[in-house]
Length: 315
Ligand code: NAP
Image (cartoon, rainbow, N blue to C red):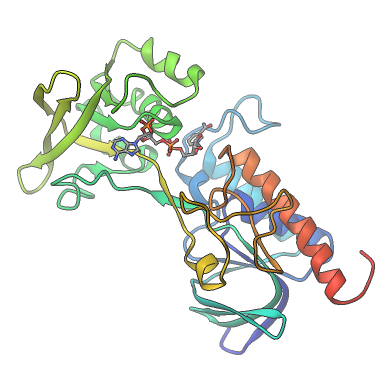
């Protein structure tokens, strides 16, 4: 793709929001190009089992669901290119994207770039990343089968990933900085009833230690008592929240909220005409595969209306 590519709609990001947007847009007749820098599926790829996506009462692996999203978008005619978007600008009433595979010009853009894991921010984290420090239980958990594992965080990710890890070890400790979990009660009660799990609330991570090759322990502090403990552990899995991927939104001049998420209206429109935003990167109150897919559908519908209005035809 060295020449300039022209398309009606560029969808940036192929997680559930982007792929859902691509399905709806392509099915509605828009020439739709999806640009994805790593692998189609986004965070779904790292979820062992998704139990709350409607239509799959038995649950489905994140990988399988991602594959189905991708197949459906392709079936309706969306093209998926594996390319990174370096720069985005408005030009001539449309958008021009400089990507690792060349220039893309589109009439509208749906940004579905999601969010990445926030680092835990303690000494040892960088040194032992990939040597026991991880942010993905399904990717790295099996390396630590039957070994002591520490999980850090109190949200849905931490608790869900901890539950996955309980299938690999009966020596799992989870620490959370507050006195109660943020995660859904249904997930928390499953964790609480597992005899292989030690829960330490009001506890923060201070340091990750190792022998130079591998993590061997973690230093934690009880914030109520001030007691500092060194826990033997082979791995530290961090799930302390997400950082929205807004670089492209910022380049295009879209407004962000105080927490750094892209502000959209109920139709997923941003403050920039023709730029829509879907999924975890926007200021949504609930971040789920189902809500991301809904956002994508809505953004595609509104982008189609926008493009039709540009072209002066009824939709
Ligand atoms: P999150 O909901 O933002 O939770 C982050 C957790 O990390 C919170 O418990 C927070 O503590 C803690 N934390 C933040 N900064 C910290 C720090 N510096 N040190 C120690 N702890 C820190 O993030 P998430 O769990 O990754 O979830 C992201 C979104 O995806 C959420 O909307 C979530 O509902 C959704 N999600 C849903 C599912 C599901 O439905 N199955 C699964 C995964 C994710 P506080 O509680 O004290 O703020």
